Amino acid sequence: MIKMLTHEDVIRYAYNECNAEEADIIQAFIDTDKKLRLFYDRLADTQKNLDSLNRQPSAEVIEKILNYSRRIDDVYSV
Amino acid sequence: MKKSGLNDGELVIKYKDGDDNAFAELLNRHKTKVFTTILIIVKDHYLAEDLMQDTFVKAVKTIKSGRYNEEGKFLPWIIRIAHNLAIDYFRKEKRYPEVDLDDHIKTLNNMYFSEDSAEAAQIKKENYSRLRMSIQVLPEKQREVLIMRHYAEMSFQEIAEVTDVSVNTALGRMRYALINLRKQMTKTPLQYDKDAHP
Image 1 (spheres, each protein chain N blue to C red):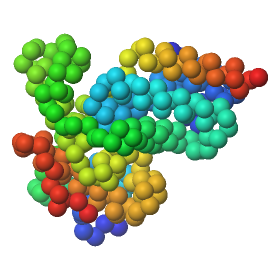
Image 2 (spheres, rainbow over the protein chains, first blue to last red):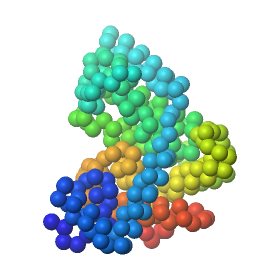
Image 3 (cartoon, helix red, strand yellow):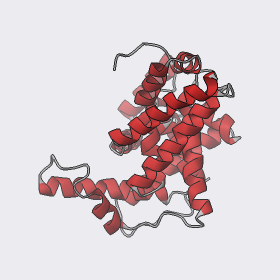
Image 4 (tube, each protein chain N blue to C red):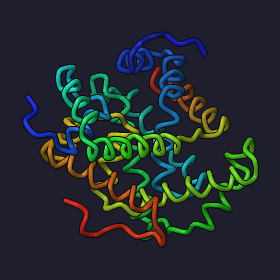
């Protein structure tokens, strides 16, 4: 049971770490409290920005790793 | 590549037993998160690729020698290897990546943003650089929690156990990391608020 909502509760909610009951309560707080709404919106925006940092390694380095993973089979199967 | 529908732990067991496709699936599943984690810490794309190779080589050796014991928590485990290798690199070199916006932009030129208009690409590049630098200058404990939660997808409970703090402390560090990032993204020059950490 959440008595007083904190920013940490909103962070858990934004990262899907609440049970269904908690999530409903937190969402209701966010819907009615302007300050929490602002905090949540900024948090969601930051999450989106963090997602935008995702980058792919080159196909070449993936191939090198795969080659190594196959070669080492020979070592451990002897 | 055809997906097996197996979880990470099952793929690790299949790879240990000689199924190379299982490792290929693990690599494909997690390559972006591992690479991004390293790239956030180091500022060089090629160095990040070298460290990514070292990370997976270490993982392969551990799995094949039967020393892997993470019971399905493959991603947090390999992210920790990647994080430690990246930090160790700079400790050995006795230097930390310099925060240099111009250098970031030069490195990124034509690498990731070629499909955008010139102006849109420039804005994206600057935002990308600023965010990455903002993460680099976070206090270490805040950066650690941010990477573990956002990129390694560890729960706050798991982070608390790994870093030997309470869940509330882990959450508090995440909160200050997010506040500091927000501040950095809206101001210049790049500095973090030294008072804003638990």
